[in-house]
Length: 240
Length: 266
Image (cartoon, rainbow over all chains, first blue to last red; front, side, top):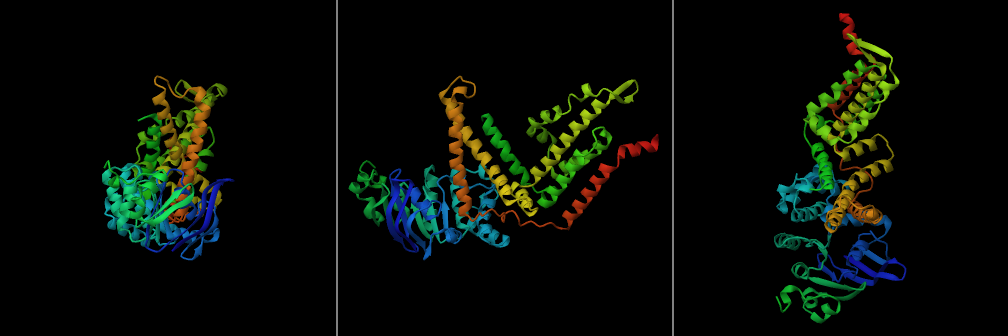
């Protein structure tokens, strides 16, 4: 369970990016984090991962987010970055997937088995020994999700997982996200993807929670979305 | 492909070369590092007039190139900017040291000429040995080996991150110079008036990306240790290679083998 209690964060004094955020995410939930540019989605994710400082209290499975607990908390949470080029920094997909498990204490044999089983599950065996700079954007996104899954995280956090993907790869990523059993937090502007992958939506606006509820309820509320500089998902819009 | 993109591509080729599977690639990184360092010390310490002694030193890089399947043309191409600089070292020696040292028939060779060739040879041999190391060993493994050799962790981490960030920085430069060229048709390069803002932007963008990359490493458990590269342990064959190399370098360094062979005939 992830719990935010009155969490605030600001880059500069008097310019808060997150203001008094409180919510709870239960184990196994899939939560979409939506909001206009600058609403605080990425900052919220970074605060949760301990990459940014914060006021207030954050806990994951009862473990308080503080410096001494960071390694343990980060082991439980896998983060898929928006830009896969920044996530895939090792020469090959295999090396990248081995990086996390080995750092978290798995033996080389155990890590190799884990990597192979994740690749098999995602049907990405063909990428195993490919160089990261030689695979396509879609393959790179799938591989970057695979690097996170190889760490066996309990929570998967994704920042714009469908950004810059063509329709085919976007659908592949959506299907992959749907198949994951872990707790998921997905920050995105792609509301159609959120509809397909999340049960619950948290709408951020100006660093505050503007709405928190069932995905379909929020994403069909034209007034609420437009009031917060968003639009109905394409499939609900009249022009679609 | 612009110049920067081709530089990025060349940079990545080194990673590909290092991921090969030849007998040299399979040697333990620490052993290769130790051999390379010892080789460089031996080469550099050869007296500037002992050209004959130095010639023997070429056997190590030549053998390693063969065993690793590295191409000599690839080496010269990749180091095309460095090699002329290396060759420039000692280029004035023939003018400064004109005393005759040996003669071939009627042609006398000055000490300056010999020392120039020796210095050039030293530079090229050292580059060849370093190239063999880098082209057959992954950079993470080299860093791990340095860590095991008790090089301060902060220095090793700095080296590793610099290596990672160089390509990130080059990518940013490529994107920015492309954006500049598209809005400055007919202009060759970047105008001097734009250098300040270009460099500033490049630095800021590279820092952002580097921060993101570092965060990604942290989130996957990176704490400065090289667990992912330290799985390899030196085996018997590595120690045999080390012993053979150290012995032969020492012999080549202290015994002028061509001179010795020549003395049998003269």
